[in-house]
Length: 145
Image 1 (tube, helix red, strand yellow):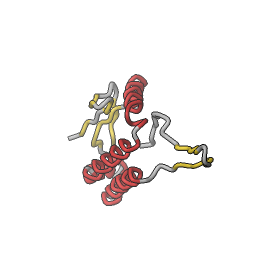
Image 2 (cartoon, rainbow, N blue to C red; image 1 turned 90 degrees about the horizontal axis):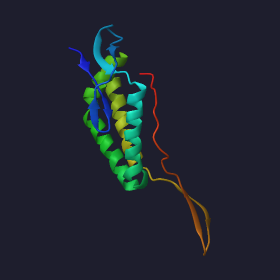
Image 3 (tube, helix red, strand yellow; image 1 turned 180 degrees about the vertical axis):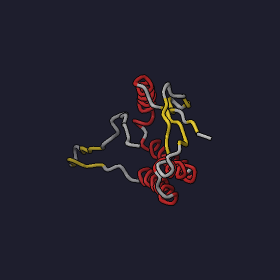
Image 4 (cartoon, rainbow, N blue to C red; image 1 turned 135 degrees about the horizontal axis):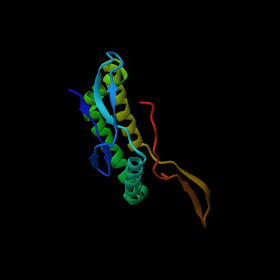
């Protein structure tokens, strides 16, 4: 039986207006249906992400760290299931596919723990000028698979 996937927009699973069949390249058999986002669905997702970003995410470094750590834990917990899907979608060996998911979880954990660099441009008895780079905003990306 084919799995049907939805968009995740503003914390809700939303069926796509259009979808497409996902075929296992190793067998040629379809195994899932995925939403094919319309411009309106992308705009809705971008709007929701921008609202979330404008909140604590953009201001609270500790909160971003907690969110990234939670994402890492969730990804690691679902690694077997997600690895199976990657295996079916891309036709690669299950161990490699699961390893990629676990690797992504490790990267998120590293990002959560990595200190944010602070560059001191000038410091004397009267002033200290420090540059701290912060996230700018939300982007949309089209990935190859």
